[in-house]
Image (cartoon, rainbow, N blue to C red; front, top):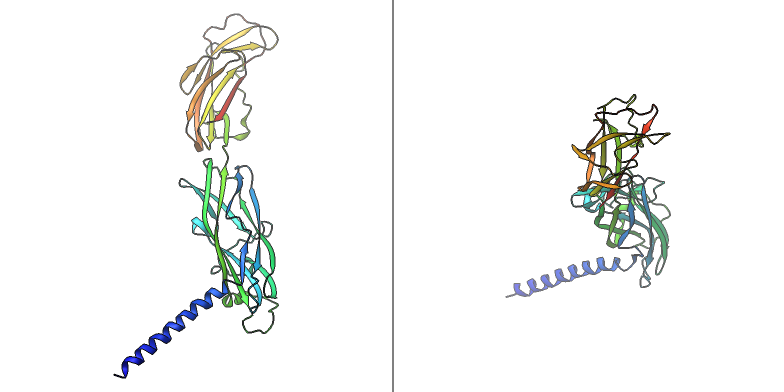
Length: 335
């Protein structure tokens, strides 16, 4: 009969100890907080020809209610986001990734890591609070950079959520502020606050095109492209390729200045020619736009290649000597 009350007392004591542990953890969350961080950063636009960057400013604020526990140092750590790795981080659109990075500053090159992944204080944002209690305010920031050279489908890329944690080195024993901080001190820090934020970036429609010799390599510097027949001979044929890379669907139009004719550069004399695009003959009225491709899907390296052929008429007839030319203007438009 005496064993029953002992079991009740033991259960009661364990319950009290567990409750005190929860209250102690909750108390640290009332010491300082992350403030002013935009929970959806969506001001970035990306073009593959340029690095894109953005600076996000925010702050740390101490809680007025904390009158007893001084804060010596705080560090801010950043999770991996959807990529699951720190270098590179990635935003995603329908299985396509746009790589980016978070730095304390782009100029420093210090990539921001998670609290548990940090091997150096350079991997975190570090702030010396100086043993303050109650309300304090510390401003800070981080920078986002999306490196150039990523030729990806246009549209809205997202990375979400990205965890941000605020950790603090607290003076729990009242020995006075700690004036220096080392990587080993991270083991003695307490989690003070955490939140998640998102990064959204619009990748622009981008079209890259070139006219190159038949089956030639893609060359951005090939425009304008000149076809030179040399001495004109009836039935002569010259060939070239139009190569297109596009991050969205696109259309192709062409306009002939003279309309299927080469004009003498000094007098009103002409030599007719036929124009074939992607295997089909195309009539080119002078000064009129003619559609060649209505709605081609996005195309990436090595791009879409459209063979073109120009053939001089079978019988030239009697025409004055000299130079003859026509100008074909191609327009590629994102749909």
